[in-house]
Amino acid sequence: MNRLDIYIRTKGKCTAKRVQVKFRAADDEADSYNGPELLSAIRALVADKHLEQSVSVHEAMCMSGCPVGPRMDMGAGSQRVMYFQRRKPTGRDDLITWASVDSVEEEIARTVMSNA
Ligand code: FES
Image (cartoon, rainbow, N blue to C red; front, side, top):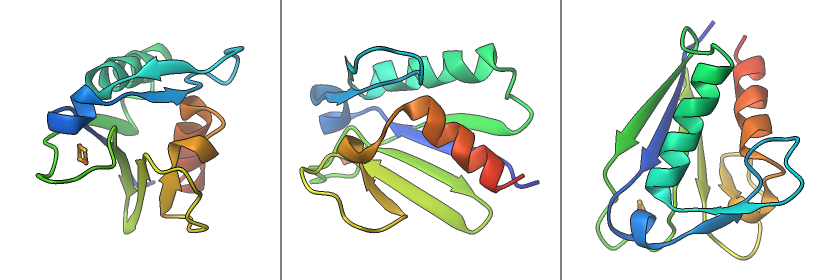
């Protein structure tokens, strides 16, 4: 099984900007997160579900001039998926807008399962 690496950007615009997203699948409503809050919530989720053996969560720097935060990248083996802020969906499986995400928990579960 490939390890899943999750990178959350926590500097610059990823801290200044917020995303409205449902975190847990069971949550009734979306909540607002900036990069550092997303990082803490994902670390707590991984610990809560005892996924430390298969999922590593990393803090990463923003790229200068990048306008798409908060940004999260998930990578397992050669597969890499980027989640970012944009109004319209991209239609691509590897470039996913936050607006297309049902919940962060389901995105992580799906990626872990597809790499099992
Ligand atoms: S705004 Fe932080 S990486 Fe793009």
